[in-house]
Length: 49
Ligand SMILES: [Zn+2]
Image (cartoon, rainbow, N blue to C red; front, top):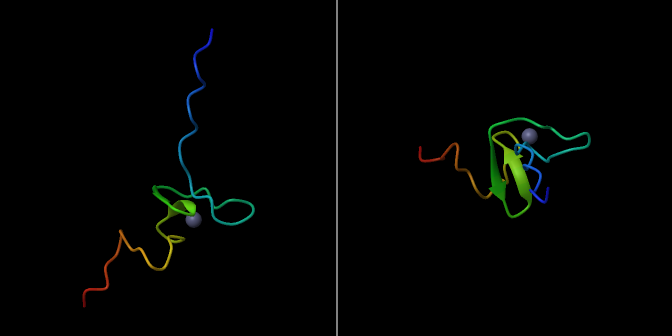
């Protein structure tokens, strides 16, 4: 009866309407997909070249 609702699966919060792409990562600014991740943090791609 008092069970909490399951949280919706995370999706990209960027844009309006939201991008909704996945997979996403949680950043200080919210969930962002690979394409919309903050410029300063690049967990998907690294500019090591
Ligand atoms: Zn996105």
